[in-house]
Image 1: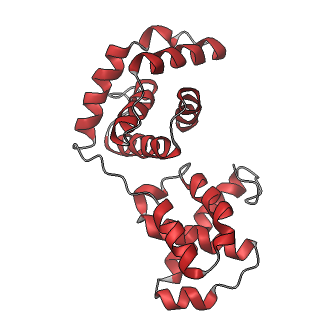
Image 2: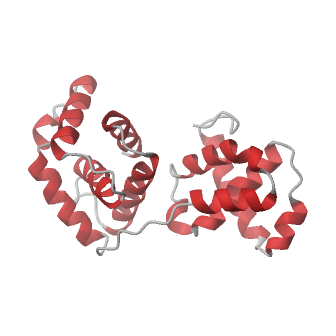
Length: 201
């Protein structure tokens, strides 16, 4: 379903922040509610719709429904009948309840930029940013604070690109065991899919 959110978001042309917020909402709902009660095929577009409102990049429901139906035609799915805007709007209300009306999502992107600047390794920005993007394919956003995910991505980027950041990490007084565990989880994702972290997912 996460990949469906990415594909749909690319079709409706929303900002990256909207996409990652939608993915975070989807993961939160999946941990709190049964997928027997909440149909994931409706939850995913409703999360994107809600995230577009929250991130002030509103997508019109009819455009969302149009692109969902187009994706159903391309994939040969018979689910077209389920994707009417009234169902997405109803699911939006259910999502709000499932999320306890708490819609604020803190992402690792701002801490990443600040930490890279503080470390003086802004040349790793693009690589570390790609690593942060890939963390949304996991549950890290729900488990660790955003700055820890950002630090783990900086750690991986600095190791893979041969930058010595040992003294900078020591100055931060961060628990390196936790940081290394997060880094290993990220690297396990790449290992699972047999992908080179330098190229991303």
